[in-house]
Length: 217
Ligand SMILES: [Zn+2]
Image (tube, rainbow, N blue to C red):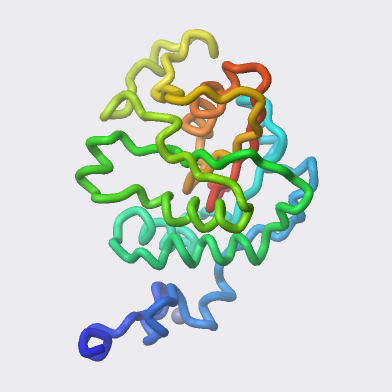
C-alpha cells in the first residue's frame, strides 16, 4: 500500500510506526488504564450507576483520567475517522470482560441526534456495539432509542427532582420483559446513561445493564 509508506500508521502515544490496525505500540499498550476488577454482581462502577437508576450490572473497559492514554483513545474514537478504533476497543472488551454469567436480550447504543449523525456520517459506537452483539449472540438495536434535541437540553437547570427532568431520549420500540445492555463511550456524570435507562425502565418488566468504554474517575 503506497499510502502506508507515505503516511504510516503511528502509535497514538509515542508516534512509533505500528501495524495499520493498531492504535498503540506494544510498549504503550502497557500504559492503558484498564479496569482490573472482576465484574461480579457488586462493583464500584455499578454502585455509582445505582445512585441514578436501578440496574443489574455495570461493566467498563478503561479508566478515563486527564492526559491519560485512554483519553487519547476515546478522542480518536470520537473525532478521527479511523474505524479501527471501535474495533480495537471491542476486541479489548471481549478479551477482558467475562459476560458469561449474564444473559442480555439486546444491545442499545446511546444515539447521536440524527442531524449530528448525518453530519458525521456515522455513530462511533455502532462498530463497537455490533462486534459486541455478535460476540454475545444478540442483536444491536441502534434505532430503538432516539435523541430528541440537537443541542444539549437546557431543561436540567430547572430540575427539582427526577420526575421533573425532561428526557432527551425517547424509546422508539415496544420492549417488554427485556434485559437491555446499554452501551456508551464515556461515563462522566451519568446523566446521559441515566436518561436512556429510565426510558427503557418506564416498562417495569424491563431490566438494564450498562457497558462503557471508559469511566471518568
Ligand atoms: Zn507507543
